[in-house]
Length: 122
Image (cartoon, rainbow, N blue to C red):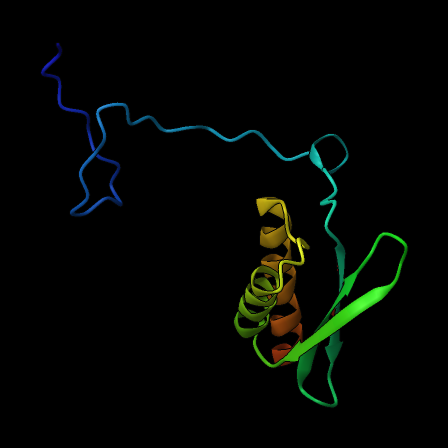
């Protein structure tokens, strides 16, 4: 057994480092090769500038809009959607990357609303 003390990354303050700690270098994401659809739904994000709100439409792959969630804050919206999904057993978000995508798009929409610039969904 080695008594070597692993150096902490400079941003670590009071946390302890696991004996198996390693830094992982992340390869670039390839939108074509790495993307996988979430079988639960897809989302459309829209900025309603006149109302000062953001809308998220939950859609089936038959292009039917099931619900639209409106709010002023991306944080409020994604938390409500995910709670609604879980509470009502909808199964809309089955992939973590899909939920992360929703959060990213909502932050972009919120910034566009705040700055008064155009929003384009990726």
